[in-house]
Every structure is written in C-alpha cells, then in structure tokens.
Length: 322
Image (tube, rainbow, N blue to C red; front, side, top):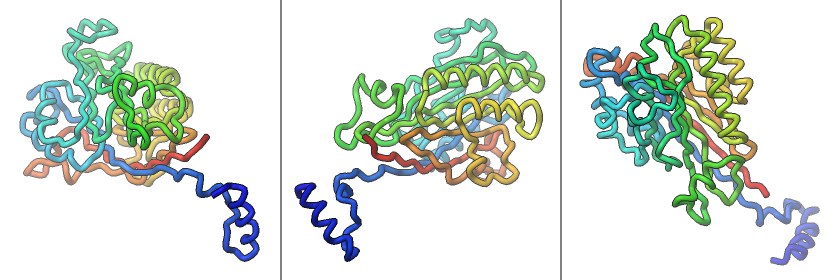
C-alpha cells in the first residue's frame, strides 16, 4: 500500500479507534528474541590421584548429564579426560582443546606441565572453535598454580544467524565476532568467556593482576558487545579484598554478576560465578541461578567434582534498528 494513502486512511480512522496511528508499523521488523541455558563447571580433571575428585569414574557420568544445557563452559578440563567428558555430550560445537605447554606457552612458563583446562561445548556455533587463550602473567606456588597455564579463554557464540543470509565461511568472524554492535540484518552473537583465577589463599595481589588483565582484554576485544563470563573466579566475595576486587572489576567493565539480577540466596558468594552485560542492541537477561548439587552426583550421592556445577538461564532480545 502507498505509504501516503495508508497514512491518510489511518488518520481518518484514529477518531474511531480503528487505527493505532502508526503508519510505519507494518514496515517495522519485530524484535528477535530467544533463550538458552548455560552451565559453568570446574570438572576437577587432573589425573587420578592428583585430582580432588575421582575423574576416572566421574567423567563418564558428567558427560551423560551435559545434554540439558545449550552451553557448557568448563575449567580444569586439562585434556586427561576431555574425550571422556565429550563422549556422551550432545552439543554439536566443541572448542579445540589446549594443545599443551609444549605447543602453546606464550608466557614461556617453564614450570607448566599442562594447559589452561578451559573449554566450551555449545549448541550454538562458535566463531572460531579455536579459543583465544590468554594465560595469567604470574602465578602462585601455594596452590600449584604454576604447573598450569591458567587464565581465560574467549570465543564468540552465534545465537542466531542472519535470517536473510546465514553467516559462514572464513568471513564469519568478521561479521559475528568483530568489534562493534550487531544490527538487524546480521547474526546475533555474544562474546563468551571461561576463566580460572589464581587459587592460593595468599595470592590476593595476583588475582588483582588477573582481573586487570581481563578488563584490558575486554576493552580491546569486546568493546560495545554483549558478554558472558563463566568460571572459577576463586573470589570469596563475602571477604576482603575479594569483594572489593570483584566490585571494581564489574564497575570498570560494565558487567553485572547474575546474582545482582536474580535471587541467589546463600549461594551469592560461592567462587563459581557468571557475569554478563548487554549491549546497545542486544539485551541479555538472566532468569535463574542454581547449583546443580542434586543432579551431578555418583551412585552414592557424592559430588562428581570438588566444585558444584552452576546453571544459569538467559533470555536474549535484539531490538531492530537503522
């Protein structure tokens, strides 16, 4: 219908209530929206005898339980049981595991005997599947942190592809994973991070360095983009200086802890956390936060890891724009 004619007809009908007065409504695209579930899990994947758990028996059980989640970010998945953890996991997109310090050791940590233990499993496409892995620059000896290349890892998760033309091929990262915000005709993507901070009880200064490094990386690589970070933060936010360190990091990066949006009860200060932020165009809204303590147990009811798996549900919405 000619827009001028439509406006004349609409104006003539406003008085009777038969027209909303919005002649452009039929030309406006609807908001795109959806939801997904995320699990963050430190799987205690050191070799049997060194792990704080029983990974040889527990890894197969963990694998069978991962299918209820659209996205899984793991820590301490050091490669010893990675194939077992993935054997029954139905997510169709898996990150390429860390190749080990002999192949990837950008800080040349000579004491490292394993990689960072960080991985992603996702029902959504990862751009790219090779995570950008950034180790912490320093480590503490008290918790044997120097034996691993602990740090954070980033990918871009495509929640929905371009409805007119699917994003793919070598140019995918440039469209869905580059800087800036997405617009109505592009794929909808979120920068996804998994991390593992230093663990030593006296390593407060090192954890502050870790957060500074992550904040700088976010500013350079995820500016104006929606972000989700899940992991083992090793921050007891009911204590100092951890509470202040975490609060300052969130303020600097514009992130929010999920527990600031949904009720977390007594779990608000557990060290396994998920933080997030929306962008100008893409809104992320967490709708639940729960530790799956009753599901991830062995036949005797004992936990499958020394960490409880954290499940968070998200709604997302992308508003149309010019």
